[in-house]
Length: 347
Length: 226
Ligand SMILES: Nc1ncnc2c1ncn2[C@@H]1O[C@H](COP(=O)(O)OP(=O)(O)OP(=O)(O)O)[C@@H](O)[C@H]1O
Ligand SMILES: [Mg+2]
Image (cartoon, rainbow over all chains, first blue to last red; front, side, top):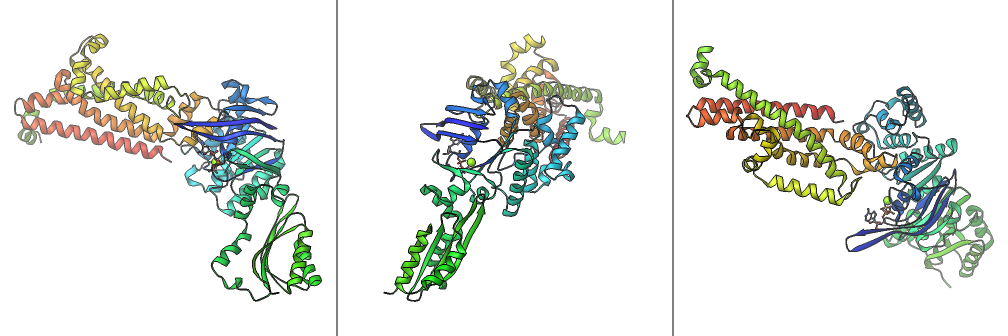
């Protein structure tokens, strides 16, 4: 359990003050995967670094597993940090040490014997499926393998929490997928609480249970992934969803004057966004049947997240003006948001 | 062979003992002042790194004092340094002349230079590693020994290499003002008595010393880089 109460972090850089985090309160439950998203500079990294006090908040209280970290002295804080793992965008492995040496780093000096350390390292490497790389140096590993070593190292002291700051941002989509899969597996097998900082929507959709949206140092929206993405309340959240969805490509196609956007009289291009668990296909076939309109899907983007499916469709609808208007009204009643993007309706 | 050498380097062959004594003095000055400087250079280099703005033991006062002191000492030309530290030299080693008397000025001339070398080697350690170590609960001391010094080993070796090469030059200069050694040997015979072969042989020996330092250093750097 991570509890942040009224966290504020202000950087004094020369004459200007940077309010990186402003009065953020957040509670992250045991065993959940919690996402924090936001555009660059929103304060995500600063906030997550306040959890293990790599960054000491200017004001506010941090409590982890019932202990108030902000009240601890240096020694006690260091012991508490051993129970909070952290991984980074650029892996931060020690280049002079082998994979074994890197994973052993946090175990040394903790009172374990050489044999105990060796067994623990082997066990951790097996967990991240890198047993065969024990003697390799980081420079000999791929990005995904480096992050696996970093995860093994972060888990060395059996932490209850793993903080991930842009842990997949330097990886290709396929490798990202495998690291996310590993994180989810660790979450399920070890009951690990995972905090994921990212600017990639896909990451949040893929593994998070709950998500907070950060903007200019504040958390502006928070809820389950399904709640936040199916019914975004804030403009910034909608922007976020749009920039990562292919549904806004239609505007680009129109700007490029692509042939598919050339409409016949009586046609219009619409973007349908499903706000709730409304299922797309039956609705579309239903309006074709009941309202006598043709619906030609240009592209569609429906993703499964925990709790349901979210997404939308861009389509060309054609028919009589009244039929089209009725069909649009019907969709709106079914909680589908309808945006008319290009209109060539005839009266 | 003997005859050939006597022909081309007559002034060396007439006093080989003196050459070896000078070489011994030079090596002694280098090793003693080099090792002392190594210890102090690493200590000061670490202190200046950890007390700096982004250091793990940030301390403006300590940082500023050390930083200024190094800058001042580095701007003093070495021949002036020799004269400047004479009282201190007498206090420390009891004499200001001879090989022994050359050690303190050599240390004073080398430590600031070597400290900067160490500082820049440590600065090359990715700050992310320090952060990762902090996040794993490492103490500042652990970070110094297990991250900074270990991860910058190739850079430190490079610093030692450069420092020893420059120390070859400084020892020759210290020798010329009464410390003995190869510099003194070359000045006394090669320069003052016009025995050109002495100068040539000394230059050759110094060239070999520099090459050995450089070769050894590069080999160690290669071995410690992964
Ligand atoms: N050590 C620091 N000193 C001064 N300003 C800082 C420092 N760290 C962060 N900032 C500032 O705080 C703000 C938030 O930065 P932060 O790194 O938390 O953003 P972020 O959301 O993680 O962005 P990104 O997605 O680019 O990583 C930025 O304006 C940044 O310039
Ligand atoms: Mg960041």
